[in-house]
Image (cartoon, rainbow, N blue to C red; front, side, top):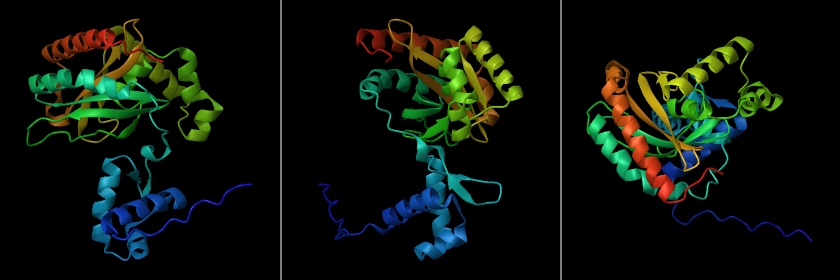
Length: 266
């Protein structure tokens, strides 16, 4: 006999702003797209209030703004849990190295893992620059657009790349690449394998460039990646020889600690 689910009671103390944000997520999930006026009417608040809430949902990857100035579900809506048993341990191992690298580079540094065709940001270290890249912890991006994601994809086997971007499941997920785009992407991955780092120039977000490097376990398999992100107007400094040397040295130190802790790619 199937038991009925328990009745969900309305909380005694409603946090209205949280409830509104969750209802916006439900609208994105159920309607496909929503406009500010429509959402404001549903919630009984002003369009300006919805605009501020939507800005946060976009920031955290739960929404995207399309060309018609409407909002659609973002990549975070369709990504399963990380389900990596060593994720927290990885953050603990890498945190001091990320903090030191961010201080040396004076730019934001991120730690991320790949989940299918997406990358999940596990940890961000910000710096004190007035104009800086904000905290992306918990955010989700398309792996082929993020520097850290591309660094990880460059080490995936050909069958995995084919499945992610040229299969029926890729078409159903909206991630399929046409022949020209796929061939160009394959050339980019080959270049990343040769150089050891990946570059993102405003591919995942306007006005932001990033440098990405993969992190490996003791057997040489990629377990995660790091990225250094900067506003485009000063991004050349994260691509120069000094930056590459600092990033590579930090990677070596993190990989030594990853090996010592016994963290291994599954």
